[in-house]
Length: 336
Image (cartoon, rainbow, N blue to C red; front, side, top):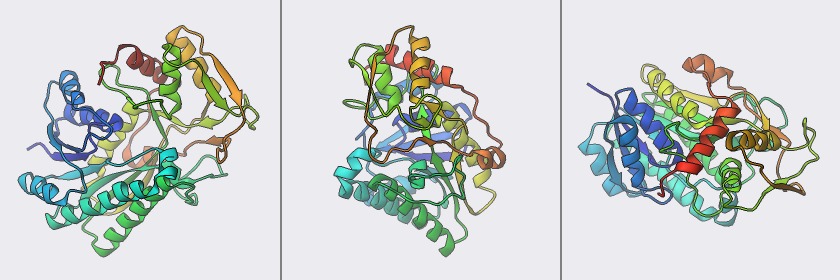
C-alpha cells in the first residue's frame, strides 16, 4: 500500500518539486493550497513530468471545517507543511498577515492532525531563524535570534512543535531549516514564478539576462569576502526536495523532534552567481553597486553535516547547474 502524504502549500515553488520527487518514489500525493502564490496549471506540469496525478484541494489551512473533512476522507500517513507567506520585506510591512497566515495556519493544522491521530509532520522552516549569525558555518546548535516577522513566525511554529511533542511523545516531527533554494526542475516545466518584481537574487538575475529587467542592483561591494559582495548558501531546489523524501523515511520509525539545516555548506557571492548566469545564458548581466542594506550580513552558509548524517543525504548540484536550470526555466517556462 502506497503511503499517503499531504502537502500544504504543495504547488508553490518548493512544494511542486517535492510533489515530483514523491510521485516518482511511488507515494500517493495530496495537496492543499489556497492558490495565493501558486497556479493550478502546475498540477498538469507535475503530471507531465511524472505521468501520475496529484489529488488537489483548493483550501486554506486556516479553514478548519474543510480541513477536518479532507483528513477524515483520507487517512494520511504524514504531512509536509509548506503553506505560508514568505517575503521578509512584506512581513515587516504586514506583520499581522504573517502571524495570521503562518502561525494560525500551523495551529489549525496541528489541531486537526491531533484530532484524527495523524502525528507525523515535516515542517518547512528557514535559516532566517538564526538572524545575523556571526559564526560560520551555521550549525543547528547556533543561537536563534530573529530580525523580522517572517522569521519570527517560523520560530514560533518551531517552538509550538517542540511543545506539542513534549505534551505527546507519539508525535514524529522534523523541522527543516532551508538556506536559499534556487534553480528549477531540469525538465524546465516547473520553477520559481514570483509575481511582480522578484525579491530573490536568482529569479531577478534571470529576468535581467532575459531583458525583462534593465540591470541588477548589488547592495554592497565592501564586505570582508573574496570579492566584496555578500555570500549565501544556495541549494538546488531538487536537492532540497530529495531531503524531504529522506526525512520521510527516517521520521516514522522514530518518534522525536529533529531540527536539520538544509544547505550545501558552501557559500557563493553575488558576483559568483552573476558570472554563473553569464556562462549559463551566454549573455552579459549589467549590474551596479549601491550601499549595503541595513541588516544584511557579509556571509551566511550552513553546516549541513547533521542532515547528511541522519538522512543519508547529500547535495548533488553545483552553482553552474543551479544557474543553468534557473535560466532554462526563465527562457522556456509556460505562463502560469
